[in-house]
Length: 119
Image (cartoon, rainbow, N blue to C red):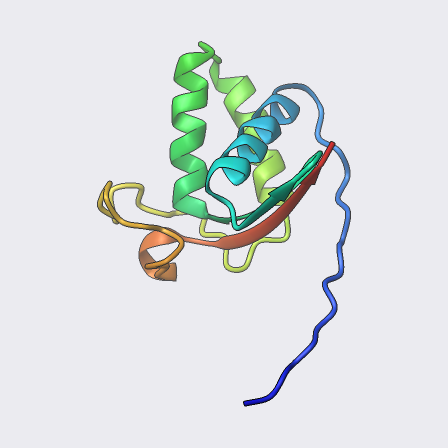
């Protein structure tokens, strides 16, 4: 057995505005609760596309957002450097009890992204 050492690099993305900024905080909270590392003022979390779109549905409903506000958030999400974002993802393709990270399947769960949040 050997010891491998790697370097983590960050590609900081433009800060979203408006409704997308509010939704980005939802992602940060999710990463803090279910991500793999968190500390003072930052956290890391993996996200599947289906997880994020389901979170967006809940966020939209909870905040009574209209279609243009939802579109603003979707446009921001699509601008992120996803692995394999799918425009025609079937949100019913995965069961609600699927772990869309541990059991990740690109055909059912869509794209994948690993995000770092720092505040």
